[in-house]
Each structure stands twice: as C-alpha cells, then as structure tokens.
Length: 145
Ligand SMILES: [Zn+2]
Image 1 (tube, rainbow, N blue to C red):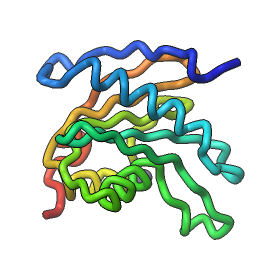
Image 2: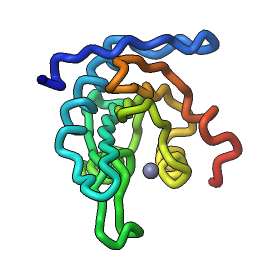
Image 3: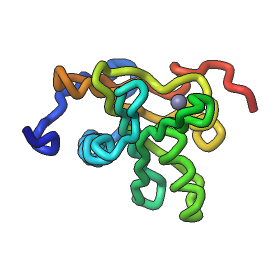
Image 4: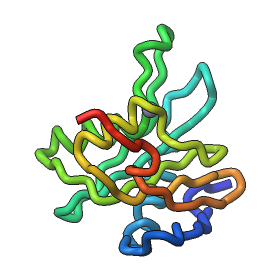
C-alpha cells in the first residue's frame, strides 16, 4: 500500500474561509510524505507536519522519539525549526497528519503561536482519510506572548 496515493477529504471551517484550499491540499501531501519518515519506535504514533510560509516555501517535520521520552520532538516543532533555520518567520498555514486526526500538543501550539497569531491548520486522519480545518487561535486562545 502506498501512502502517497491516499487523498484526505476535509471539511472547511464554516466560520473562516479565507485560506487557500489548494495550498492546504499541498501541505497535506507533504505531511503525508514526511510522516513516513517518523521515528516512533516507542509509541508507534507517526506524525507528519507541513508548514507554508508567506514566501511560498514549505517546511516539513516528523516526530522523532527518544528512549528518554522527554527528549522526543514533535513533528510540528520539527517543521518550525526547519523554517527558522531557513531564515523564514511567517507561517501562514499548516497540516498535521496522524493515524487518528490528533491536534498539536500544547507545547507545539505555543511554538506555532510564537510565529503566527492565527492560521488554518488541517488536521488529517490518515487511516480514515478524513480531516478538517481548525484555526490556531481556536486551538490556543490567550496564547502567552
Ligand atoms: Zn507537539
């Protein structure tokens, strides 16, 4: 089974529709691809994330677990680190792909909010090929600044 062949259907957030569906589709493809490279021997919970910036660049990350558990890095933060290392600082949209449509953890929400007060994030369930769009500001209201 080739994971790259899967398509994820997503429902738009009815409140806000100012995001580009084609961009979100591209981010989903990138997140699905990078998820295959996740290092998750302890949880077996593979996560792929892709972040688009204002310049049009896309940065990806996958979770990298560690035997100490505490040293584990999430996919979302991995993508943000790539973005910063490339000299970019303005994320405009993101996609996160997991086996169950899970949302970013609290630490990742705060790290994302460091660089974007709000942006659409596609949360995709790879196994069921479903997903939906949420807004970062809804995931982390009253973010620490
Ligand atoms: Zn996280």
